Figure (spheres, rainbow, N blue to C red):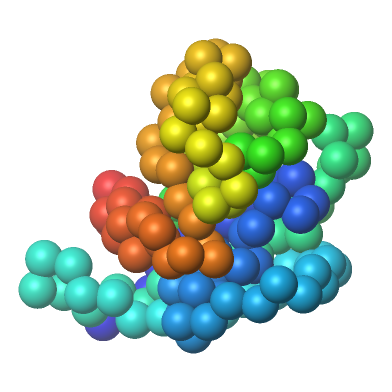
Length: 161
């Protein structure tokens, strides 16, 4: 079995912890508990007849002007940037945010995930897609467990590159 460090990053309150809880524990809570610093969860996934132990680093959310310690990013094999489909301020500056993650982590490909699909209509989601200047890799709902497994499967694949 191989272990891979993967990161979940993005603004505060976008649902990073909820995505991880849904993936690792199959549970969802409406209660918002802010992550302080970083929280590490693990889950073993099977990919191409190989077991991978994902060390999932839930990096505390920030505002655009706050800096995340570079040490959190060191040694990461893959990263997912999560934004809230329902909060414009979390996706207006995505190009710069992703560039910062690339610089800090040294990773080329960052998985871009729009979360909280359950709060919007299909028409509203399409409007968000028009506003976001770069392709969104996946639209998820931690609450309804929609595309959560897929997001982490893609992350696991990226960690092997």
